[in-house]
Amino acid sequence: MRFFGILGLFRKVVVNIVGDFRPIVYQVSESDMRVVVHKTYALAAQTFMLAMVDENYDTCPMEGFDSTRLKCILKLPYGAEINMVVSCGIREETGVWGDTMRVPFEEVYHKM
Picture 1 (tube, rainbow, N blue to C red):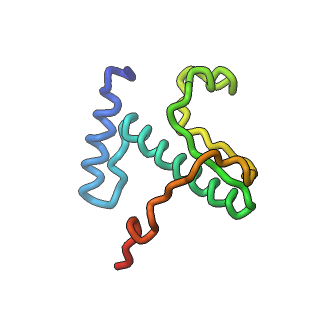
Picture 2: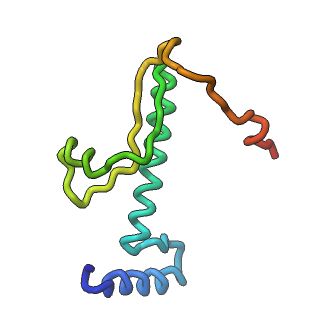
């Protein structure tokens, strides 16, 4: 890839040496940064969805979409990665076709 991974190896060595003397982020390789960026975008999407609820809109995060087609529609570069698609809208009372099922709050949240 980029200098056959030598640059990433160099970064890791430097970070491990500097990390002996002060606190530092150890995720410096390209794959590590890719994971960090995807987590950051997921948190931004979560904040966006909470803000939409505050404005009385409903949202739905989606995965499992045709990213190649979506990148083409949005005119994104080939190397771009799409974290998720979030649909937004105002719910119609007749729009839900079946019963919805939610796990009870008490089963997923435990106060400590």
